[in-house]
Length: 158
Length: 68
Image (cartoon, rainbow over all chains, first blue to last red; front, side, top):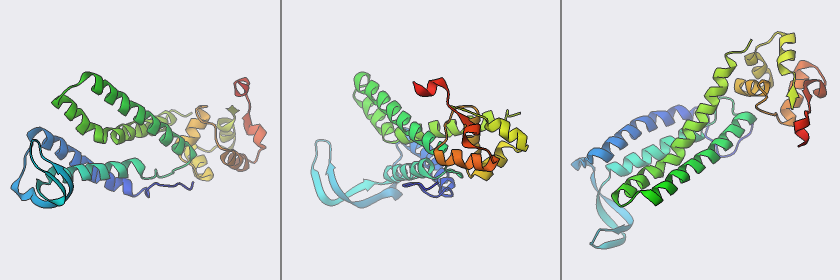
């Protein structure tokens, strides 16, 4: 089937190879907040507003880039896993893909709505950090689960 | 919509995987159709009828619920 906007199926493997270590390191980094000096770089910034400090537009700023690198890798890995074609990307898979995307969007925003109403201060910041990635993660889980279910129920044939 | 894919497949003595290959779709798609969980596109329906060498109406039949 001809599809738009999807990566070749071989990219999925690379997606997992990037996503799994980046996600593990990302979560570790969130909790222990290491800032290795090796990652202290001077980087171009469109906008930086320091808490109770100065604001920079279109300048250079000092920053520890470890969390930026991990976030980029998690997003790139997730996109590759989510949007690489299945080996047979046919019409049923396309339907499952669409339904899973709708489902993931609903679940992501239901979680966010609950968080907006019932989570406050730093707690809400934590939710926002995870919420940057959860729509893709929810999609990946739902989509592969649906495909897996259809695969296993067929093993009961005859 | 009802279908006789499983019956036709048994007549031809081919597995879901074989049929998937012939129809150029995934095995999940064949399985989902046999379980009545997926209604194929016209193109895929025609392809399946062609593979089994039957009329499309022999392979797929409307049900009352298709008129609701």
